[in-house]
Length: 325
Image (cartoon, rainbow, N blue to C red; front, side):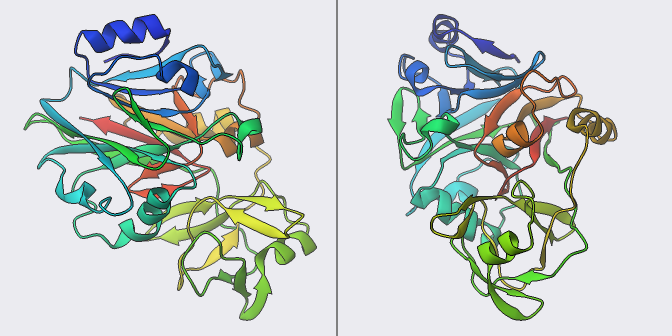
C-alpha cells in the first residue's frame, strides 16, 4: 500500500494498472485522470512527512489494492445515501467523500447516527473542499473514476480477508471547557438560536459578547467520544456558521483554550494507540490553520487536510484514521 503525493502521470499509470485508489487533490489535476478503480475528492492541503503542505500540482494517493479482496464503487445522493450501510460487505470498511455544503452532506451528517447497523463496519472518509480563498466561489467536487459531481457522495465499499478487521479511530486534542451549558432545541447546521443555561440566546451574540476565541469549537460528549463542532463567524449577518451538526438533548460547551504544541500533543496521543497498520488518515483545515501546521510534521502521519472528517459521523477539528489489523 502506498500513501504518497504523485504527479498526474504517476497516478494515471497506477490507474491503468488497475490499482484500487483513494485520491485527493486539486480539481485541475483530478480532471486529467483516466477512468478506473478510484474515488476522489477536491482539496489542495495535505499532511506529509515533511509537514503540512499546500499544493496544486500533486495528488495524494492511498493505494488499498493489496489489502482488499473485493470492492464496489457507488455514487449516492441525498435520496439514497442511507443505502451506504446495507450496501457494505459483511467484513470490511466503507470509504466516503462528501462534497461540502450540499444536500447529501447535510443528510448524512444529520441522519446517519440513527441508521440501523451504522457501526457494523467502519465508515471513514472526509468532506471535500477547495482552496480556502476560493471557498464560496468554487464548488467542492467528488469523483467516481473520471466522472465528477458537485452534489453526490463518492463511496468505495471494501471487503477484507476473513482474518482481518478494520477499526476507525478519532484523535481530538480539544476538551470541554468549564463554561456555560449550551443546548439546541433543533438538530442542524443553521442553528444560532440556543439555550445558554436555560436562557434563549443567539449563539453568535453569546460567543462575540463573551469574547470567545473564534478558533475554539463547541465540544459535546457522544457516548463517551468527544466530538467537535467548529464554526466560522459571519460578522455581517451576525451568525456562527456551523461545520458539523448539533443535536437536541446534548450538552455543548466551548472547548478549553489550547495554547499547545499541536505536533507534540498529537504524537503523545497517537503513541498510546496501535496505529502501525494505518490505511487512511485525514485532519481538519481548522487544525491546519489554527495550529500553524504548514511545514510541521505531526508524527509522520500523512493524508488530506479537509473541510470535515468522517468517522461514522461528520466531525471537525479532529484527526481520523483507519487501521486494518
